[in-house]
Image (tube, rainbow, N blue to C red):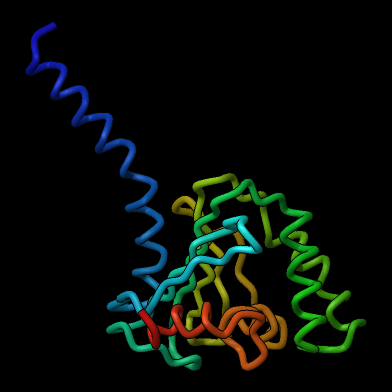
Length: 176
């Protein structure tokens, strides 16, 4: 095989590998016009890196009432049951709703959340019309319209009672 056909094969493989990333971006681009990076941060517990987070909004300016997207790129294998357990724990810590209300959201989380293998990304896209679209690998996996749940979920990263204010400030683009 000569160098030229190998290069063509390599270029074809690279183009094919880029398709899921391009498709994933299209979901966000459709729901968050002119999406640009607001800020980014790494979430870790002690020395364990859990995920990288990036916040996107039109023109790079975040407004909680307007469309925006939060992308979590997992640095570990995130199992669905563990993601749900941590989400519930954080909602309760923040007192986002009564314990019984949070527990009533479990079926919604069971349906909407999935396992997140290391290296995969989940997009939480706030469409600005009382809808939260969850997408991964170029496909919508859930559409949520429960406004109280949406607020409680997004407050984990963007609300007034976040666990790590330095993380939140970086996500909001307010620190380097």
